[in-house]
Figure (cartoon, rainbow, N blue to C red):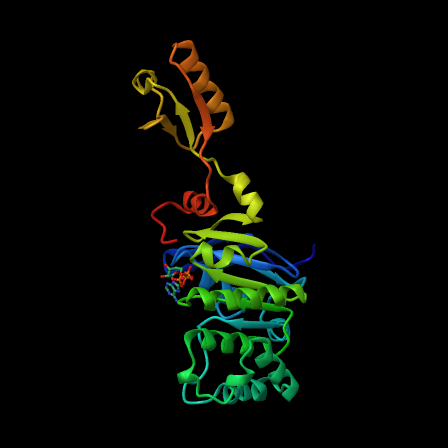
Length: 299
Ligand SMILES: Nc1ncnc2c1ncn2[C@@H]1O[C@H](COP(=O)(O)OP(=O)(O)OP(=O)(O)O)[C@@H](O)[C@H]1O
């Protein structure tokens, strides 16, 4: 699959704080790429660099197989719609009047404006003042503004932030539809739940570093679920120096590999500690995510 965005060692340092640390992103064409991470992990800074709004301290960005440089930026941005400071739009103007501003700035046709409003299902509300829109409608207007130029790539920073479940579902449906039409969508969120069911590929940031990039299935493979060892004599196991937490069934061990499991079982058996069952605890994607980003993360 060809890539729409690739970055190499992308880094942004503010004074002595590294906000984005050596990112190697790979965003394939026609997918919804979920860009996840706790507040302050560097999502917005990365997106601003991708749009040429902030200059990287080091590293490179390639968009549509062309390096992003001051000389190529204007041309590349013609194919990119974005919403970074959400939601945009002037409250004292109607939805349509806001769209007209975009139309004039980008020299777009009436049909492009009509189509963008229809895509986000705002045609019936286009003559209402934006200050009377719900948050979901404002977010959808922002997406319409980004869509009007008929971009090949949409970059949306937290478009579901603050929406109720119905509003999130609307954005999810919309973005999945756009991707099915071949538009590549990069969408950020600090909440896995908001993004999980729409994203084909996930990129997870923590402390400015990309700690995972791949599909949901690959994220599961990446995880090491806790191990439960059922035994009536957990004390004997602990006395052997095995690092575990006593639980109702026996012992719970975290972060241990298959090889370590075999070794623990061998030691228990040699010591004559009775083992009734050994099993992995089923993990939700949220658990895997929490493990990766640290349970202290605001996810
Ligand atoms: N212009 C700036 N000057 C100094 N520090 C900045 C600047 N912009 C961002 N930062 C810092 O960089 C880090 C990453 O911020 P960023 O906004 O990219 O994170 P984020 O993942 O988008 O979080 P949020 O969801 O809260 O916006 C934070 O510690 C932030 O304080």
